[in-house]
Length: 112
Image (cartoon, helix red, strand yellow):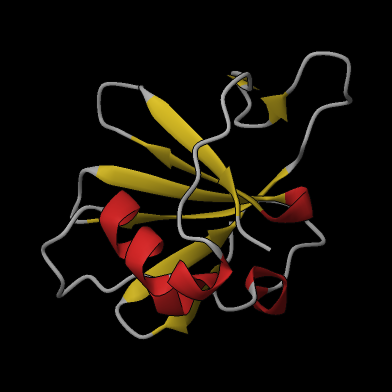
C-alpha cells in the first residue's frame, strides 16, 4: 500500500484505494512520536477543543480491519499508522478513529 508522510515522523499508510492524506484532516497533527504519552492521552489533550477522546463502545473490529456497529453497514478503514511501535491508530470513514493495542484490544472514538 502507498505510504504518505502526513505529519512529519508519523507515516500514515492509505488502506483504501480512494483514501487521500487530506481525508485525515487534523488528526495526524494530534500525534507526536517524540511525545512519550500513549495515543489516547495525546488525542484527548490535542482534541480538547472538540471534547477530547470519548470512547464509543459497541463496535466490532472485523478481520479486514473494517468496523461494524450493530444494525449499520461496515465502516471502511481508510488509513493507519503506528505510534511508539506499540499502538496502531486507524482512521475510518465518517471520522471514526481506533487505537489498537499490541494485545488486540481497542478503543474507538468519533473525531470530526
